[in-house]
Image 1 (spheres, rainbow, N blue to C red):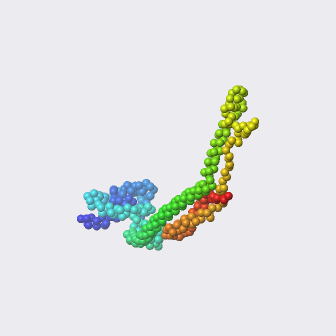
Image 2: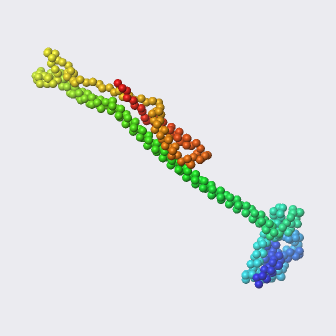
Amino acid sequence: MATGGSSLTEHLSDHLLCSICSAVFTEPVSLHCQHTFCRECLTESLNAGHQQCPVCRVPIRKTNFQVNRILRDIAQELTRCQEEGGGSEIQGVRGEVSEVCLEHNQPLKLWCKKDKQLLCLVCRDSREHRGHRFKPLDEAREDLQVDVGSALKMLRGDMAKVERLVLRQDKVVTTLRAKVDTHKRYITQRFNELFVLLKEMEETELKKVDEKSDLDGAGGMETNLRSMRDLLERGKTREKTLQAALENKDAVEFLRWWDQESGCTITLRGDNLASPSRSFPRLCLKKSRLQFRYPDSLKACFMPSIEKILARSITRLPITLWEPPLFGNMYDKICLFGLHCVFKIINYTSAVCTYVSP
C-alpha cells in the first residue's frame, strides 16, 4: 500500500498542487486557460494587481470563478489519506517544491550553472538566461556536493596539519616555560650566594678594623680618658670649696675652716700659697697611630673573592639553558651585572684600614 500511495503521489503531484502556494488545492478554481489555483490564492493575486494568469500570463477575463469539483474531490481524498497516515509522501513532494520563483510563482526546477541561480521553467526560457546551461536540481546538488566533499577533505587535511603544529608548539612552549623557571631559580640562587659572601666579607673587614684598633691601644686610651674625667670631677669639687671660702665674710668661721681644711685643699710653702693644680697627678695625652683611607675603587682589594664567585658560577651554570636566540649572550650580561653589583656595594659600604708605624 505504501508503495502504491507513493507512486500515486508522484504521478498526481503536479496536478494537485497550487502553483501559487505550492500546497494541495483548497477550493480549486480554473481559468479559461485551464490553469487551476486555490480560490483564495487567485483572489489575493488579483487584489495585488496581477490581472494575468500566474503561469501563462494570459489576461484574466472574469472574476466569477467556478470551483473545479473533480480536483476538489481528489484533493480532499488525498488530504484524508494524509491524515490517516499515507500523507508522508505528499509532504515529501511538498518539501521538494516548497520554494517558488518570486517572479513567476512557479516551482524552482532548474539550476543555472552560469548565474548560479535556482530557476523555474519560465525563467529558463527568458531572455536573461538565453544560451545558458541548466541542470535539474538533483544533478546540480550531486555535482556541487562533489566539490563540497573535496573542499571538506582539504579542510580536514589542513586542520590535521594545524593540530599537529598546535601539539608541537604547545610542547615547545611548555619546555620554554620550564627553562625560564629553572633559569630564574638559578639567578636567585646565585645572587643569594653573592649576598651571603658579601655579608661574610663585611664581617671580616669590620673584624679587621676592630683588631687594628686594639693593636693601637684603644683600650688604654679609654682608661686614660676615664682617669681624666674623674680628676676633673674632683677638681670641680675643690673649686667649689675654695670659692665658698673666698666668699665667707665671717672671720671666726673662715679661720676655723682654714685650720681644719687647708691641709687637704692648698699647700703652704713658707709664707706663700702654692698653686692647688700642683697636687694633680701627672697627665699625658695618648695619640692614635691608626689611619683610614677611602680610595675611589676597592676592586683590587676584593678581586680574589669576586673571581672566586664567578668561577663557582661558571662551573655550576646549566649550559642547556643558554640556547640562542632566546638568551644569546645573556650569561655574559649576568656575570657583568653581578660583578657591577659587587663593586657598587663595596665602593659604598667598605673601607680599607692601614696601620701606620710610629
